[in-house]
Length: 495
Image 1 (cartoon, one colour):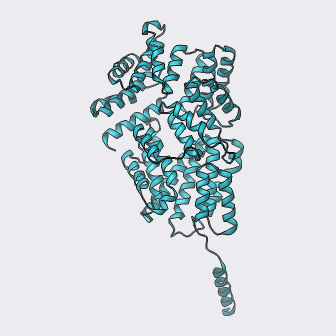
Image 2 (spheres, helix red, strand yellow; image 1 turned 90 degrees about the vertical axis):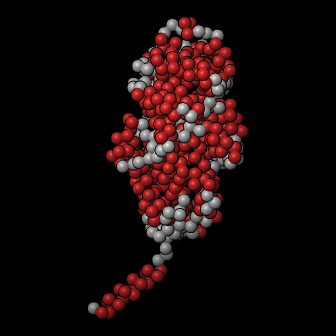
């Protein structure tokens, strides 16, 4: 018996001595691969990762970075067949990450980042509940890692971003965060993220550009500080020519900040090398901005998106814009063709897609002058839009909806041109008439008026305006406007 015990012990020791420990080595080659992936040169990144796997088979970082490749591919292009093929790799990679040493900060961080990325992917494929639970798991894992390794700042990059967003969840979804125990704060979240941005830590340097990506979006959509956003982009000299991800980001931020000319320039001047992965979302963004500028090739880009994109997000909005483009050209056959497709394709997950579906069902076409003024204004071509509107008066429009839109559009243009008094007068008129109507004009007028008073430092009036926006029910873009209004209230409270 003793003999068998000794033999077993020796074989056990021999096996343990021969086993090689998995590790997390974010070495130079892995950093090079990560940089290529973050530029959307996914094939180049993949080749470097495969080389690292052959050279250093116990290094887990290449498998962690594989998940970034799947994330960008699935998040932007939303191909269901690719999703069906790749989704099983989520659990495989999590199992691999758990084979590393638990005394490394990467042990929990890699698992949390994979969960976070798959939560975003699940949203795109309609698995909302799974996405919410995935976010919760990622957040809890990050908080555990933060307690164990408080000096590991990549934790703060993701925790700060999540906390900032959690703090602005619209009331319609608040029950979800309450059930899951997710709490947020714009002030605390941005403070954590700012600490990462400002740090000289060599580990932070690896994730520097990823932190910039989160920071820029939160600056515009949550903090509503576009001046600081564009100052940051200029100060950091973000390479929008050779970094496709940054080009997409700046173009999308330009689209959402009335800077169509800037966004078009960025996308047209980027490096067009075939080494960058094809992202169909780019065609959608470029098509929208070109339509705002009234470019002749706007239709070409939007049709290219519709013909190649296999996902469901943005599709109804893109089809709506195509129908508008043909409508403004007087081609009603094509306009009606694309309008009918709105009811057949895409989803209604975004507020813009919901509004496109609602308009298509209504059978009504927008007033062509107001539509053209809207597009010009949305693109930042304010003087052109103003000239169109000033050639008309409110009484020139036949319906209450058109009169309301006329007042709102004129107010919005004055707002963007810095003529606050004129903007407030027209916003106030829009709110008085449109509060109980289904159009979004009154709610957006209240939100914009809140921004004006916030900028002036009049917190009480700003608070009243944001609350007015939140109190309006049953209008288009309800969730997105509520999120912005809530973010405004939290900023005023210093939270």
